[in-house]
Amino acid sequence: MNGFYTIGLLIVANIFMTFAWYGHLKLQQIKVISDNTPLYFVILMSWGLALAEYCCQVPANRIGYVGNDGTFSLMQLKVIQEVISLVVFTIFTVVFFNGESLHWNHFAAFACLILAVFLAFMK
Image: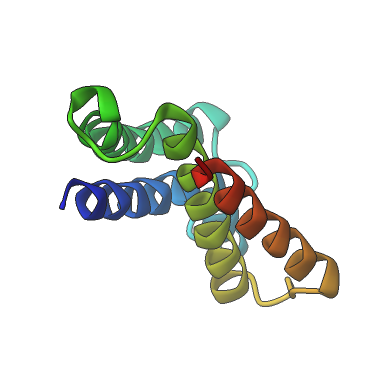
């Protein structure tokens, strides 16, 4: 059950982090914030989202780590996090940025990620 909590928390954490890193670009695009919005304001806004990300990321790692009676090694946690991060980012990009599209090389990269997960979980 720890594995499901870990992965769920990692998904939520990566949604927050993707919005923290790239959401301001969409807000600028749809004119919620302007080109003249002070950078410090954008950074503080992103930090607020990053705090929410950390509130999910840190417990996910603590719950999921095998040293805390979890399911995953550190390497496995990192590989899972990277795959979730790229999947969340891809969905975010396709849904929120209409001009962005997926190409064959993106699918090839995803295949490499699947291979990375397989290799990270090999005994």
